[in-house]
Amino acid sequence: MATPARHRVARVLALLVGLVYLTLGILGFVLADPTHVGNEPSNAVWIFSTSILLNLTHLTVGVLGIAAVTSVTRTQLFGWFSLVALTGLTVYGLFASATNSPGDGINVNWADTVLHAITALLGLVIGLLAERRARRPAETT
Image (tube, rainbow, N blue to C red):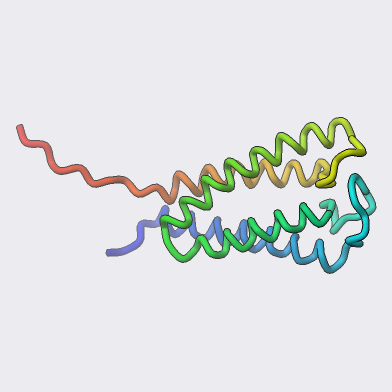
């Protein structure tokens, strides 16, 4: 049985999200100073801020995104996980970026918040595209 086109699109989107986040996580550990804790704007990779917790989050999303490509069920689960987790991180980022709080241990900035919001929306798209519709038996009249 051939894989529907929408499942292939969902897998490609999951792979792209995974690669972007894996790259950000690795670069966050390699290029940024891991000794900075809390809200430190200078600790960044390109326009995205870094911290140990944020890098671990990015690595986790990246690995899960790449692993999600192996089956449609995993792709759908990754989509819903991304929607829920990154919506929460987006809300946190909105408050942390708006207040510029020194207690921000994750060290998110506006670029991170926008990235997380876009990824949450992509998670919704991935989850819906990867949805398997149950086959209903033909109704008899």
